[in-house]
Image 1 (cartoon, helix red, strand yellow):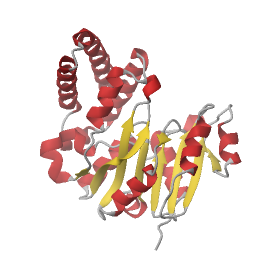
Image 2 (cartoon, helix red, strand yellow):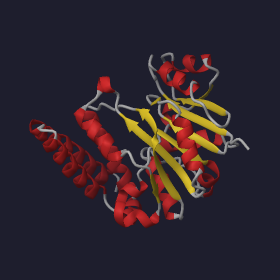
Image 3 (tube, rainbow, N blue to C red):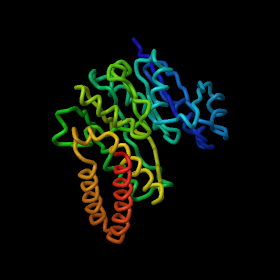
Image 4 (spheres, rainbow, N blue to C red):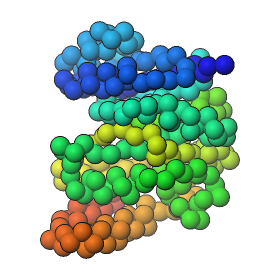
Length: 290
């Protein structure tokens, strides 16, 4: 029997490129019928117009009530009759057959709550360090992660990304869904709960999307401050799976080696500046979250 499929995108002033995101969704070929919705938090541009023009359902959430957990929980409740629900962000561009690749992957693993796909940076906007971050977090090899991987993978065991992911709704409901008060990193929170309850988290390298953050140093600082706040408020995740600091050190060593290998020694100081901004933001946020 063909599965019932849903796809949800939280939006806010997605911009003129949003039509490309929606067009890429329209071109996907899937083994089940797809119901697509957006949940908008007050766009004043053409975001909702682009969606409605393509027959996509538009729901709304007040900006002052918005959290990353609440909007995803709202999406799964709207799409509650679906077997699987894809979650995306408004700036993700699907490659050919990305949705089906991700769906096929999670269907093969009956104990998998969530699977996420591979993200690559847009070539025209490519930041060298962002590309290295992407390669570190999104390798070319599939992963099926469970509690038995914790000793080897540490905190990466529960790494996930709702920029492009799919959830098996029956198991998501079984572990309690998305916590509505989680303001950031709801994807890691749910992945951690899933693994702690004996389920799996998957990574499908064959399901590819283009997604570029292209953050400046101030934006990078704010992002890592939010990550720190999340971990300060949810200490149990690092207690169970290992510290982010260890993962960060591993990333610096990996990227330093890559710079030396690529004969880009002059970029090493920039790497340490970026790493320092991340670390300061993270530690500040972690202390704020206590």
